[in-house]
Amino acid sequence: MIELQRAGLPACCTPPVGPPPILLLPGEPQSAKAAREFVREFVTYHVPGASEDYLDTAVLVTCELVTNSIRYGTEPEDSVRVVLDADDSRTRIEVHDPVRRQPRPRPESEHRDRGRGLIILNALCPGSWGVDDIPMGKSVWAEVKGS
Image (cartoon, rainbow, N blue to C red; front, side):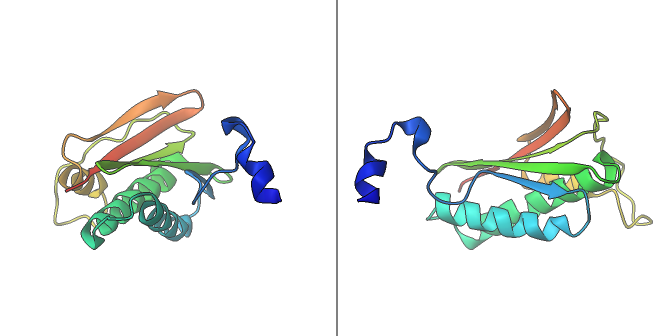
């Protein structure tokens, strides 16, 4: 009976199918793990033919974006938002944080153990990432292309 009632609902009222596209996380280093699990579940559901390499790339890109957002785009008690969109050709990953300061690439260095996030992002998503201003901060996004 419930299924019959749902079938008659307009699109705006129909419950979503599969994992939701948005995850709100506290601005804490432990949130990177939750973001990795979230993107793996989302992509597995919404891109059923995705290869393990594709999944791993989407997970790594998400982890880099979330880690950088937490490290450079939040203050204590802030949160970050992960927004995903996927189809057969690409997965778009956005991470929103409340700080408008734009990320900037640092020169490669063997003497630092940090500062390689944008280098990694550029290698995994060449020409397919960027930064947009949003009403309450910024959105750093990247698109993982399908093979």
